[in-house]
Amino acid sequence: MQDNSTLGDSAYRTIREWILERLIKPGDALVEGNLASQLGMSRTPVREALRRLEQEGLLNAIPGKGFFVDSLSPADLAEIYDLREVVEGLAARLLARRIMPEQAEKLKELAAKADDESATINDEIAFHSAVVEMCGNHRVAEAVRLFCLHVFTYDERLHRLTSDGRIVIPGEGRIANAHSELAEKIISRNAAEAEDEARRHVRTGRKTAAKLLLGIHDD
Image 1 (cartoon, one colour):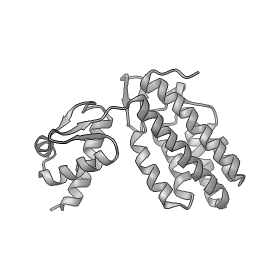
Image 2 (cartoon, one colour; image 1 turned 120 degrees about the vertical axis):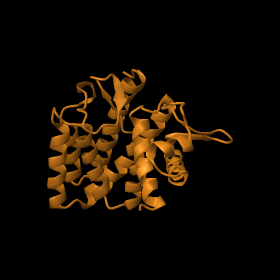
Image 3 (spheres, helix red, strand yellow; image 1 turned 180 degrees about the vertical axis):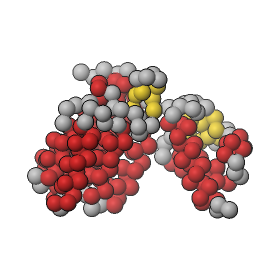
């Protein structure tokens, strides 16, 4: 029998996926009893999952009414990318100061995959996650873990947002060799240039996200 902690993790992952895939839409109420029935578990792990999702900004708790799916506003997007720019820039700076030969090879391989025309959102996440994980600061990694919840791409076939890591990154959101250029800055051990390139990379992603997700054009 699974304990409540394990069930809570399972409920968290499932409900989060429903939210990110828009199976539960912004503004929808999440009822503990209904979710517990759907997931085949008691209310306790479901309640734990809802609280975690609230802490991560995907749900909004209204006293006396319950939990509701939050919507991604232009202000939310700006805040997420402001934080990503600072934190991922710091990660690139720190890694440039300490990168080892085997780490450099790994980073080159991941960058090449992320820059390929057939690259998926998982390939892009793998590259950025490696920079963060290898930078040597576990608090940076913990901060970025939350941002990954807001990694969306646009599925042109289904005309909807998705968090499906298998989706190929749309051509409109791709810049040739962007990941390889960032990798080279880090591998060159020039910490200042690595940070500048990482921040520029995130700013470009912010413009693409604003255009694809919110219809905002910032030329």
